[in-house]
Image (cartoon, rainbow, N blue to C red; front, side, top):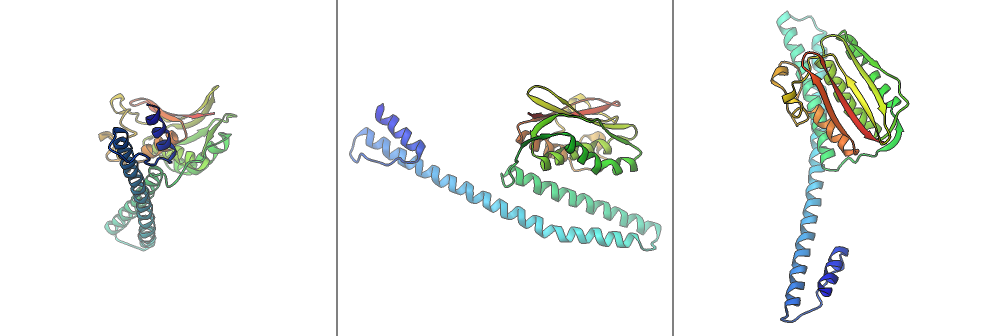
Length: 269
């Protein structure tokens, strides 16, 4: 038993080598250990190589699609400035919207793949939440106003441990959804500080989410039948959850159909 324990210790530190070369049971066990460790090392190399291939593939997709999509948007905008028949103008506007949707989808999938494969690592640091919330409000105030909505933020002195860039991405996806599914009223962003964590609330007065769907909305590509007519690809909330969970936090939702929803993001302090 002491010899087996020594072998296990050596295996864990990567210094294991066969020392018995006879017909004993201990020698056979050493041989099996050696074969197992060799296979594990080969498997580890294969995983590393596969991750490199995925990294290259994602980079290629991002690079190869960026220019065609940008051109689609550019030429669509130029066509919209021309004097066109009503039917043609409607088609050009539809083309522009679908190109925007394609760009958003590709960007989201690239970000998600980088996160899931460890190509991008989160770097959480302790910081105040006020600048984070202000950046998101600044980004979406105009979009909310265009729809006749009010986007408000309550000042806070709370702090937490988070990656500014990626947490802003998560919050932006939730705020974008709130604007999309709210026809009138107010969207409010606030933060509350507790002993061990801070909570960010994003509340809207939108259509709400049925209780039966509240556990499904964070799944990749999930879209409720009630919002199929709305623009969207069903990846924003999934990406937000991946980011927040990667920082050691979590997201939950409370909602009443017809009265709005509140998405709560919990971040460690």
